Image (cartoon, rainbow, N blue to C red; front, top):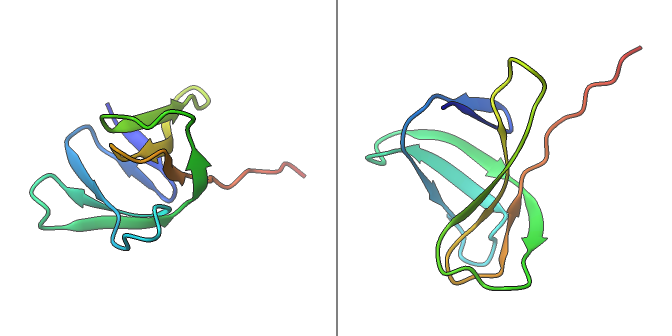
Length: 93
């Protein structure tokens, strides 16, 4: 199923998430499955887990009807720090 990331909706499929800077787990690049096309680069904010995961963790957040789930956080295996993704909030006037 499609998912939202800040500024993009990723169609159903496979993607590669990379941290281009080893000392900044909040900067994330998303590529297509064979890594031939950079889809987007996202600057997140630090997020932490009490336990270090042994596999990738993707946390999702529900969105209003008609919108795909949003990727809320990403944790890389072996690290208890990861990236939380921040989405703009809409304000009604």
